[in-house]
Image (cartoon, rainbow, N blue to C red; front, side, top):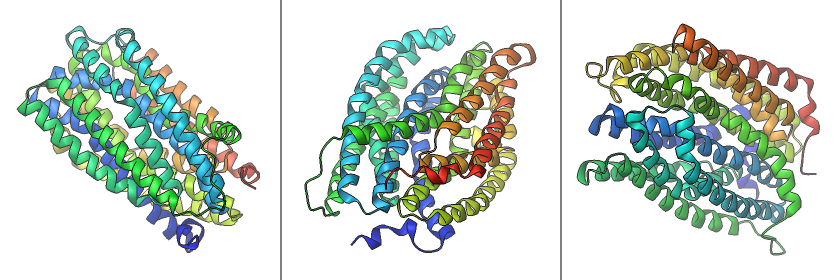
Amino acid sequence: MANNKQRLIDGAPGRALFLFALPMILGNLFQQFYNMADSVIVGRYVGVDALAAVGASYSFTNVFIMIAIGGGIGASVLTSQYLGARKYQEMKTSVYTFLITFAVLSTLLALFGFVANPWVLSRLNTPENIYEDAVLYLQLYFTGLPFMFMYNILAANFNAMGKSGIPLGLLIFSSLLNIFLDLLMVIRFELGVAGVAIATVLAQGISAVISFCILMALLHTYHTEEKPALFCSSILLRGTKIAVPSIIQQSIVSIGMLLTQSSVNQFGSSALAGYSAGMRLESIAIVPMIGTGNAMSTFTAQNLGAGQTKRVRQGYRISYGIIAGFAIALFVICQAFYHPILSAFLDANASPIAYETGTSYLRFIGCFFCLIGFKATTDGVLRGSGDVGIYMIANLINLGIRVFVARFFSPIYGIQFVWYAVPIGWAVNYLISFCWYQTGHWKTKQMVK
């Protein structure tokens, strides 16, 4: 039974990596569509101010989303390494330990977000005409935060076990459910911003419950001689050492958006609406890059668990070709089809400032997606091996560049400097991580012996 569950450590590395990454990429795309549905429906059926309110909320909520995704990926590295080493009892204990840990953590974060969001929005200089709607959206959103957290942790464990097709199916279901509920709440019941928040919470809650049931059934297929422990402090400690840098790495973009949003807010709600639309589209465009990097993390963890270091290097080299293919396609799409894409969010005639801002953002950033792809796959190797110190520093430098340029240059030279800094941060981040990868230190960091 074990052999057919180990496909990342067998067969051609490139084929194994790509076939594993593809469902993760498609799943992450559906998750972005899931998140983007709120903006499209509100922008079209309620108005530009409502879109700006949801956009102002997005940079804050996205920090929590990235904490969930980063925590899940980081914690699941141990799951992957135990699976590669065929230590199924420890693998189950690892899964149980982090499910319990993140259930508690997400509840605490939900309480914090619910209480703190008015203060955060004020500190970000949120325009007065959208402030109340933004607060309402966030208060409703944070009531469902534990469901969102648990779904992402569960999805990370499916991926860690090589079952990336399961989260894809669940995300397709939850995305369609969210869109249906968005339309129902906004058009039928005319609840506006509150409606899309309620729809998101309901869809996330249903998806989390279904995911939990499927994961428990899947774990049951891995037979062990003894009943695994539900919690292990040593596993928690080892996993936390990986999870914390992973959270930072996954959160860099969203934290950068949050810290630079005050720079955007000073240009008014129309510019914020355009920036929000461009930001959402950037989040979708980088999905193949982040998905390939996350797949590289699991690929590395499983193969190091199986003692196959050479195979990790082969997979890493091949990942550059995958990233280059995605980057070329995204460049063409951003340059040739920006008008119909942005029109899904914005009416160019009704809100010309918003449309011009979104266009400038999307066409510029579309030239540099290869940089975040190379960064993501290199970080994936370091994260999958547990060698996370340098890559955490590299991501913090990336964040610092974004915030510094946006805060100090955009008030003088214009809003464009909010996104001019992005490729610079990506490039510096990649070069630092790549130089560390070249040292080979990551090969000595296998956490499961």
